[in-house]
Length: 163
Image (cartoon, rainbow, N blue to C red; front, side, top):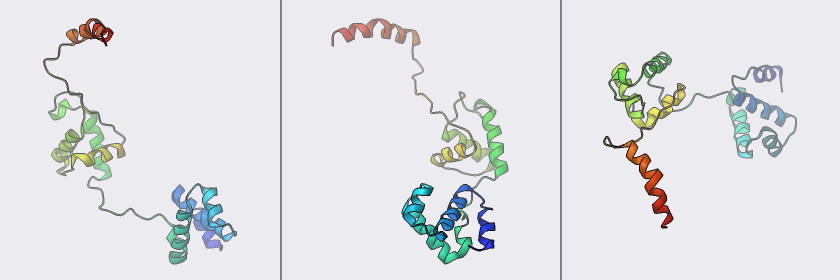
């Protein structure tokens, strides 16, 4: 390993990149792919792929790659704004109750930023900004809590005895 490689490996941008560089260092020291995989807690296939990337792309082949796919629709600034909007509470945005659902967050994003997200994808976005959603409990409007308590305390034990 030359001086340039040692300098690059010490400047890895994240732990995964550092792990790939360490695998290459171990390979240069004569370790087998099986030994490298065990030492780094990865599969032999991963080590094999890293070695191929190094052979074909040099040191840069081991660097972190940008993820494929479309860039995020919301900017970092908009994501921070979304946190604030959710913190205001659901009723402020015209919803009944304090519960935030994917559908509700998607509607707020559409109204505030003009960006349409399918509700199924909102959960990933919400987790990425450090929030969590709640699933509303479906209850009948005419629900009688006192009658339910009475049934559980009085009637259910009687029925249970008969089983």
